[in-house]
Image (cartoon, rainbow, N blue to C red; front, top):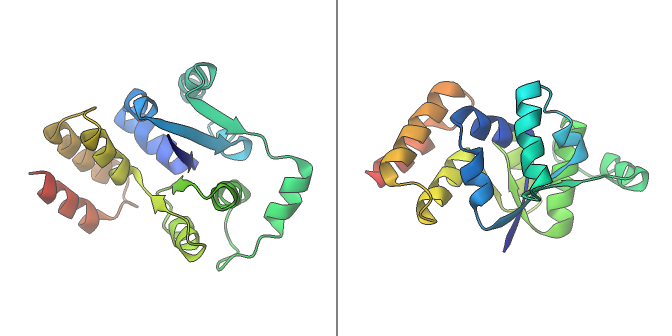
Length: 165
């Protein structure tokens, strides 16, 4: 089973696209840290994510005091990352697992640390590859993703859409 750790940007994208059940149906062990999880503030989102925690589909990693100090002291190429972002970067590096994020700076930092990193568009492709959705639904989701989130890599997503057609 593939282990992945995700930041809040992926959660928010998938929530907005209404594909959280599909995400949590992938044959992955999905983790985030308590600092990232605490960034989910809207009540309706909290309720939905709590259901995945209760069903043991989302694992919350509790960072202790010693780990907090280690994370604070972690050497970064760009030191302006938020502490929640640092926690998932640190954990992905420590566990040698895949990091899921749509944050360009965090993706660059992960690559610098030789961490496998992917975003929401890649997750949608995983839905197709795993038979969860068909190609037409994936195209709809990718088009919606670009409309909803201006920070997405538009040209890369257009290439993915072309490949699905």
